[in-house]
Length: 209
Image 1: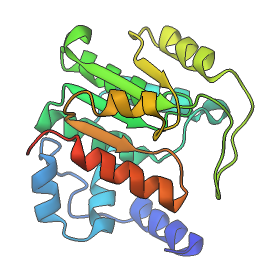
Image 2: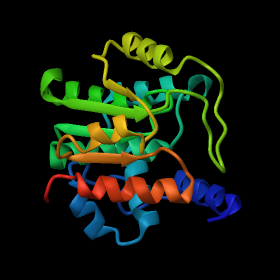
Image 3: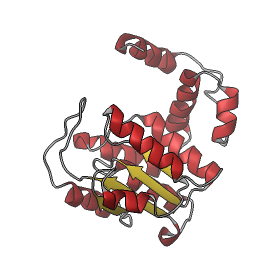
Image 4: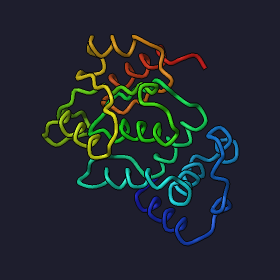
């Protein structure tokens, strides 16, 4: 979708009614996929959910990570993660490619909102924790571990476990292959060979079902 098309779509969303603008905020992810076969319509549903029905704490978290470019992604993704946790209740969650901790801290915050004890929600991030880029990405030079830990403290959240390594390094693979995961979020290198290897590793280490 071109930038112009995306802007027009967002303008249409903002000023015209949609069938689900007053929709059911309790729909599970699987039902959303059934009702809205188009990925664009699914996106719009999650965007509606973000704007109309998410807990305020999740909105505040997202706004925090928008400041100073602390996080990437889009608002709709926050609602998607909330819906995923509600339906699938993951307890072992791995992110490959952490950047500044938006997703790891979001998982921890969702766990708090769902009354999951921090010790019962295993959250791990694999990252070189550096400005190492790839074919399409460049990152600022900063102390990433200190930055992530600072954000967790500011948000009053228990820190996630960080594995300081590239995803295919032996120490990273030992962690990834050391258990079966409920969720593995691939958001690291954008280079094809690395993404392919990460996907193969992830699929081999997801819990059945």
